[in-house]
Image (tube, rainbow, N blue to C red):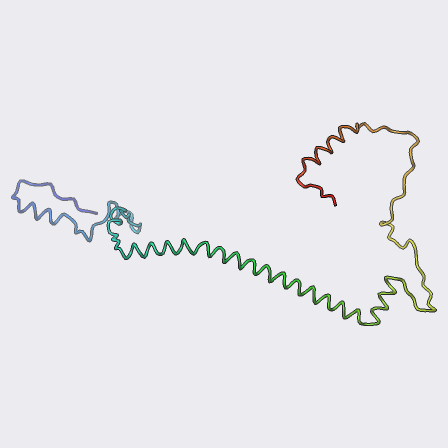
Length: 186
């Protein structure tokens, strides 16, 4: 606990100064109010005291302005550099895709130089056969689920649709006139 100075007494002035000197703490050992109770908590820093300790020389100001100017000049350049690197990587990827496509087409070209492959393709695609062979083509070899549905019976009665053609025409014209994409006639 901090010691409180003793109340002044009616004794001589010399004893008062010695008591005051004993009771006042040293500047190096001075703690903020309540520091003994807080223990390991951080002490508060006075901003005015901190700011008054900053001394700026002309050299410091020049160097600080050069750093700010350099950042101002380099930031847009750095953004451009990053943008260009992204474009380069995208182009490299497209080159790789193109090279893969070229390799696949070259393989296809090599296959077409083989007479057995040409014969197989002619038989499958164009239904060519060698002389003396009999080919059987089977119709209706589709999956039953892929076959079209049979048409149901047609009704004998006529039904009139409840819509009028004029409002439908106006809706179509206005939607075509207000659309964002324009039809190009060639």
